[in-house]
Length: 228
Image (tube, rainbow, N blue to C red; front, side):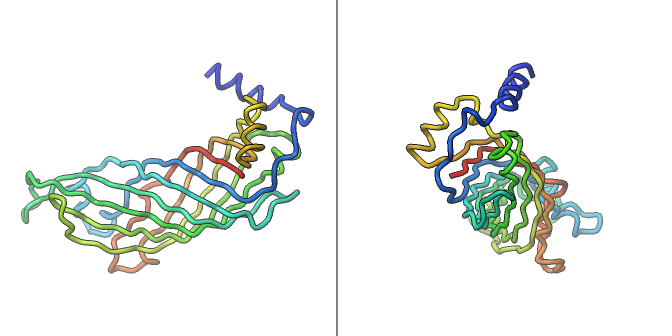
């Protein structure tokens, strides 16, 4: 914890004196992920088809998010974006009696999202406070397919929505020279580490005919944020 506390202290003490005006804002890029476990079994009274085949442990869902700034000023920034990623969970197929077999099965998702994000950038731009909170709303479409022994068995898509709250730790002040060079050469205004929690409802808006792919609990994710 001491190196982290030292780094955070250095960021908090870094003042506007060493700052430079960043290049014009275009948007942001995020790359990260977190553990995901869908609520498929929630729909089946007393039965647990997901757990029987894939177990009860989560697996990582990786995400790539690109967003365009539609506002960036004294009140922070607002971005609209698109997000995609990948999730796969291996398991074993079961027979009609529910007993596991030797056949391998996988459940795969390519999640896609349209996003609206507010980020309180003014805390860093104006006051050099490196911990920047943000909020996000998203329309979700989870494109999924199942496979048994590498052969597709079912496929479809489930729609829904999600809301996220998070914070980004701006790390520019750890190496101001490198941060300045990155902005001058590649237009990256700021580099940050982010962490957020998401509440999702991905069940075709309550349809009883669709699998519930909402996160079983709050979905947390973490990764790298580039603002450019």
